[in-house]
Every structure is written in structure tokens, then in C-alpha cells.
Amino acid sequence: MRNILEHPEPLSGATYSAVELMPGDAQLLMMDQRLLPSEEKYLTLTRAVEVADAISRLVVRGAPAIGIAAAYGLVLAAREAPRDSGEFIESLRPAASALRRTRPTAVNLAWALDRMMRAACDAAALAPEVRVGLLAAEARAIHREDVAACVAMGKVGAAHVGDGATVLTHCNAGALATGGYGTALGVVRAARSQGKRVKVVACETRPVLQGARLTAWELSRDGFDVTLITDSMVAQLMRRGGVDLVVVGADRVARSGDVANKIGTYGVACLAHAHRIPFYVAAPWSTVDLACPDGAAIPIEQRHEDEVLSFAGAVVAPAGVRADNPAFDVTPARLVTALFTERGEAKPPSEETLAALAH
Ligand code: MRU
Image (tube, rainbow, N blue to C red; front, side, top):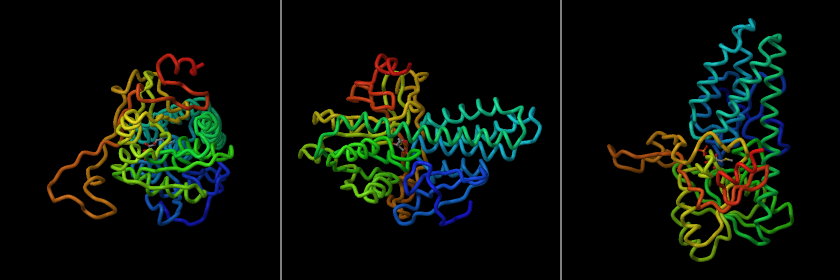
């Protein structure tokens, strides 16, 4: 991976982007989100193995964004594939498996890789340059469709945001976590574009601070009124009447309507329920996993304990103390007021309401 300062031209039309395949299909530009908010720096990646490593290390994160990054990763793998069409698919499988293994909870990752492998099968008999071009077109289509889905679900969700509302969100489900525009933050963007005044409260989101570093960065950059709180302040803020609604993203929505999202989301949902505050989830249909029966069947990624044992590079616990670090939790469907998708809303999410959107 090479550090570069040059800026891609985002496919979303925004002024920054999580990931972008450059013209020529040989270089993937990825914003290094670990450096935000201090530095806005893009890395150039040319191999699928580098993309897998970047996803594991949270250079890029957020369910839709890692699906898009993995799709572009397979384009890079296709460039290295043998010319022989018989060996083409087999040669892509190790890259697809390495990408798939990086983060197990976000179903968008497996969804995007499955779609790319189907496109690869269709392209296998063609000339190598044509194959790569077709795969690049498919990956860009995944990227473009995600932006469109965010804009569409934003409109669906904005109908629930009143003028002057304060929206609480957890983690980062914004432009940085998607092809652009965002899911939860797409709802906020859509509400503003409808002329509503909207304020956002962002939970800092321990252990790696996606709320403080990323949500606060992209909202303040776009001129939103954003207030940062520590995760432990949610209950008190809700009791004081400081939150009108909660909108979060999702890494996987099971057939039952149970939702996996960043660790801490379940706690926010319980608090919203206790204070009679609507709790909404915004996610593209690629996050809905109808093959997964319920929350108990969602694999929860366990990350390294060092993320909890240290903070901003400083050790915060005595030597020898162990830490637990599940990256996600599951909010039961009964705590979710509605799920916003590009197909409409599931209110509340359930096997029946999701089936109605499935066609
Ligand atoms: O560990 P992360 O930063 O990848 O977790 C991200 C989240 O939990 C997001 O809320 C989710 O992926 C939805 S992003 C539109």
C-alpha cells in the first residue's frame, strides 16, 4: 500500500469517498479512515490481498463500504488471473475467500462477493481484458446502486423526521460507511434537503470511536449541527428530553427483523424503548439476509482485545487484564420501530413485513 494525497473523483458526486476504482481498473483508492479526523489521506491498493488486509484493519469499514471494497478487490484479483478461461474462476476463489473471512457480521460483504463471482462465471470464456472490464463494470454498478439505495431510503426515513428534530445516532452509518450519502446519515441529509432543521447527537462509539472520529467529521464537514456525547450519556440525555428519534445503520438484518449493528446499539435501543423514543434502522436491501432466521444466527465478529485495553494509542488497563471485544450486538425486532430501505419501510421489521418488501 502506498500513501498518496491525490483525491479521487467520487462516483457518488461528493467531495470525498471511502473507496474508488480509478480509471484503468488497476488502482483502488481508499481513504484511510483510521487517520480521521486528523488526516484525509488516500491509499492506493493494487492487489486483492491488500484490500482484504485493509478491510480487516478498518482502513475501510461500514457494511456497504466493505462490500464495495471487496467487489473492487476481486477486480484486482481478476487482473492477476491466468489467461486460460478454465483456470480463471478457480484462480479467483482464494481472493474471494480471503476477502469474505475479513469481517463475518456484515452480510453486504458476502452478498457483493457472491454477485461478483456470478459475474466472473459469466465472463470466464471471454478475453482477459474484456473479463476485467466486465467485472469492473459490475463492481461499479454495486457501488452506484448503493448510493442510489442510500438516497432512496433517506427519503423514506426523512418522512419520520420532524422540523427541528434532534436525531441520535450510534457509530458511523454515513457516506464513509457506504458508496456515499449514508444510510442513517442519509436520512439526516434527506431531511435537511427537504428544508427541515435537524440536529444530530453522535455517540462516540467505543472502542474505536467511529462516532467521534467519523460521524462528527462528515457531519461537521457538511455543515450539520452535530453534538458529540460519550456512550454513557445516552440515558441521561434521553431522560432530559434531548432526543426525538434514534436512527442507526445495520450490518445484517435477519428474517425475523432482528438487527446486528455496532456494539452498543442494543443498549441505545433499550433506552429508547424505556423513554418512548422511536428507534429506526436504515439499511439497503443488501443488508437484509432472509436466509438468516433470527439474531441468534448472526455471526458476531470478535476483535482483538487491544482495541479495548488501549485508547488513542495509550494503554488504559493494568498489564495482564483481559478484555472482551465483540464488534457488534443484536437488537431484537420488537425494539425497532421501523426499518427504512430503498424498497420502502418495514414497520416494524418482521418476517411478514420483510416478505412484503422482498418481491
Ligand atoms: O465496525 P464498523 O465500523 O464496520 O461498524 C459499522 C457499523 O456498525 C455501521 O453502523 C453499519 O455497518 C452500517 S454502515 C451504513
